[in-house]
Structures are given as C-alpha cells and as structure tokens.
Length: 195
Image (cartoon, rainbow, N blue to C red; front, side, top):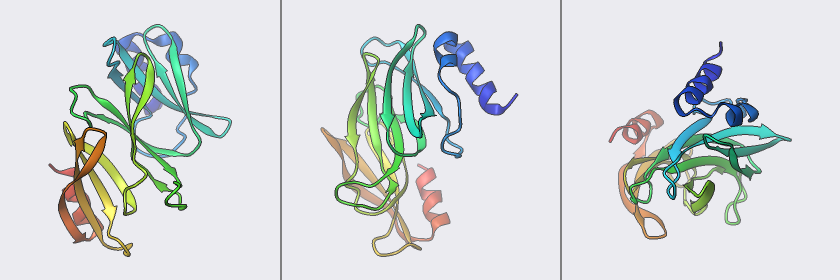
C-alpha cells in the first residue's frame, strides 16, 4: 500500500467519511511533499472538514468533504504546490493555506502565491489572495496565531534570500519585521523553518 493510500485510509478511519472521500479522485497532482488532504473544523458548525486536493480535466480542485458528503468544490485554474493550516488571522480557528503557481494582474510571471481561506458553512471563504507580495516567494507558513512568515527572494537577486514576518491587521497580513536579509538559501530556509 502506497503511503498516500495509507494516509487517506487513516483520515477516513479518524473522521469516518469513507463514501464521500473515496469518491474524490486521489492523485498526486503537484509532485511535492506537501499533503494533499488537510482537515480542519468548519468555523460555523465546528464539524471536521477535510480539504482534498485532486485534478480533473487538467485543473486542480479543492474538495471540501464532511462525514456525510462532499460539501463543495473550489476549482483553481493553476498548479498548487502546498496545502497547510494555521491561524493566520488570529481568530482562534485554523485557516487553510494554499500556494498556487499563477500570474497576477501586477506580475505576469507564474510564481507561487499565498492564498488564505477559512472554512465556513462547508465552503471556502477567501481571507486573502496575496498577489501583492513584492518579491518572488518560495514558501510561506503561519508561525503563531496572526503571524505569517514568508521566504522570499531579495529584490533584483535570484541568489540572495530574506525571511519576513507579517502580522494580520484586519483585512490582510501587513509587514512586521525581517527575520534575515541577504542570506543564502540554506541560511534563509533555516530561519524560515525555526521560530
């Protein structure tokens, strides 16, 4: 049994959603090490919801699945290289972190982008579709409630990197502090991964 199949079986056993989850296609669309299933509570009902990443007709789909059924689907028309959770907006509930690779209105280059969602009444509600990050992003994560950390390329350099913390301020995270600047990738990644 492949690790992914074992992982899905474990999720099914824990929250008891076998019919709905098994109806979702289970593939590895992004060839990464990030999980393709994330479970978190619905902020309205408190029910455990699993977000399952799959592909269909060359598009990535986020399936929201409960114990009873598939609740909703959220198509993304671009590759997704990361799913994670964390309390990005410091409201006491875990949020869904998604890192699609896409261009934006302000930057026509396909790059990883930070998207934050909450699960509310069985649907994804966008909190922030962070297309305005000024430097190319390599990764992001929530370090503590209300703090989102970014691993970024330094402006005008593809060999130097920085780590910046952003604090949630009402509508979106805003810059708080640099953790490191002008670092090589290994040093920057070490700072990014450690609190």
